[in-house]
Length: 116
Image (cartoon, rainbow, N blue to C red; front, side, top):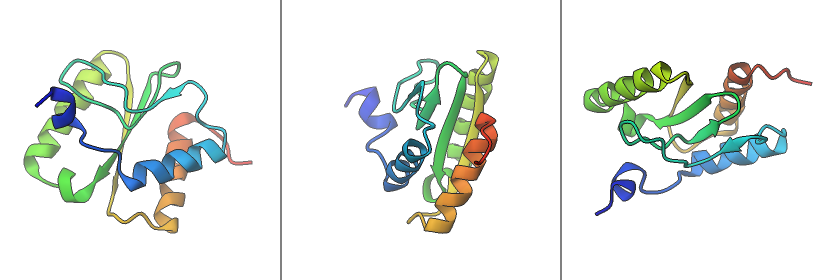
């Protein structure tokens, strides 16, 4: 089993919906998705290389566990030491329209993007 298959088995429906919403609002310029960053084997859900900003969508069913939270904190610290800004957004699947709007608002604030 490769490290990649252990790290991120598949893209979640929430990630797909957020990507669609980011695209619709023109926020995907300079962004990459599912790009491995080798330090503690992490694959951010959304990454703006030019802004050094990373967003993780953390499904509560996985990320509420103590071990996962500790690993997330270690990854965030390592990324921040390398000059990245990290935003973790917890969500409870399935993603509702209201939750998607809240996630998009949080990402826009994080990216310093104004609503038109």
